[in-house]
Length: 149
Image (cartoon, rainbow, N blue to C red; front, side, top):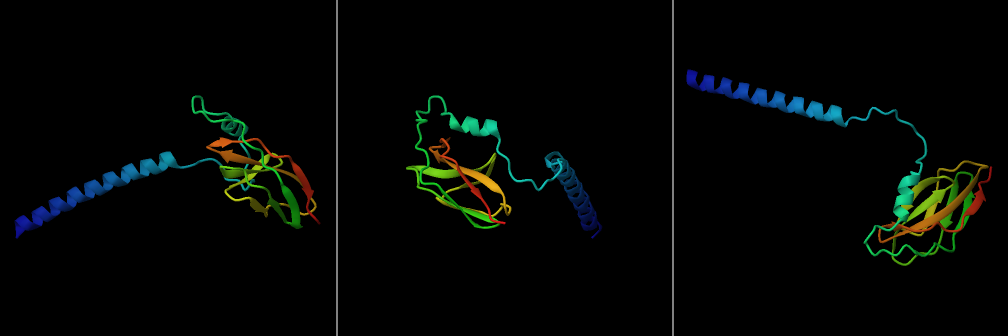
């Protein structure tokens, strides 16, 4: 019986050492992955260099950069805190980037969007850019709208 108790104690010591080692590794991984930057509630901003890099074809990929522009963009305020956008689809487009002034508030897959992050009595300018075969196409003609107060 005493041999069994000794084995049990040794097993518990080994298990505890393994658990402690795993916790140390997990703690170090958590520390190295933590984000120390301050949190803000700002609207998403576009990264100009990222957008510009997506507009260029990848060398040797055979991608044609003459992507069709979005047409038929209609922008309407549907209340003081909402603007709706509709447009004609672009052949082979997989997503559309919604531009509002200097920001990209959304990247979507359909041809309509309701922007619910607008303020009453404010003027906004919208345009849409299609993504075809992984390449960001040119922006549509810009449309300006003012939300009611």
